[in-house]
Image 1 (cartoon, rainbow, N blue to C red):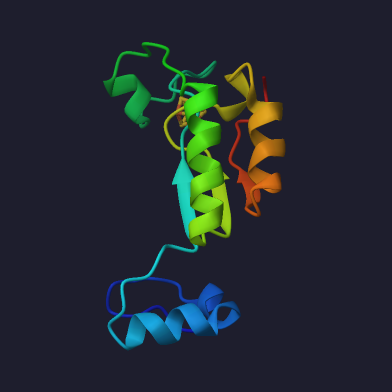
Image 2 (spheres, rainbow, N blue to C red):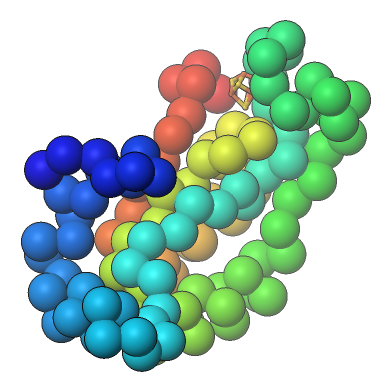
Length: 117
Ligand code: SF4
């Protein structure tokens, strides 16, 4: 499929016809995909990264709170999460537990990593 005027690659939408149908009819719908940064820390120092701008102060999402939200997001209809963003996800000490909990909440997991932790 082609990108639309907003440059959104819409190929994933063909797997969620009911959600798209509700969206097109003006209903409020829950997202099918989210990107989330569990770690605000990294073992690299890329100059183009927002972590550089934020001076590499390490911050991590609270595991218990995140798991609560993941359960809620899965119940509401989120279908996939990409862990990445500004920070290396594998530096979060509970990332294994977070991934397992994400899958148990009915949410598929993708990870963007620098691959060198
Ligand atoms: S999060 Fe990614 S882009 Fe940013 S410093 Fe780490 S490896 Fe580089």
